[in-house]
Length: 136
Image (cartoon, rainbow, N blue to C red):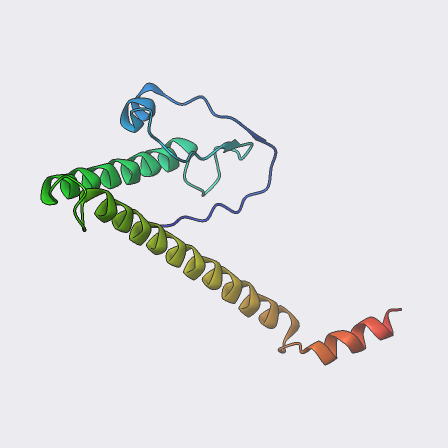
């Protein structure tokens, strides 16, 4: 499950979605990236690209749900399609959350390495307290 963190400053406003994205989502898109004021020279994927990725994720999840309904018998029996669909959705959500946590950890470690490289040493809480006492 790919997760793309969008950490970008700027004033946000709602995008105008093109007909291809709206048609792909079929009215069931559960998330949407909002457009920012980033210029065309930004290295970040565009809003349309993010919304296409979200629409594809939604399509694949709906396809999985359809496959589950076909594979499991109907009725009120234990292990019916409703329970299997719920489990598949929760497993998907768990995977998205795990990838998001990994992404945040990666960014945190990257920023930490850059800070240590800029300062020249690993700063401890005691070092920071000494710095604050010196500057007060």
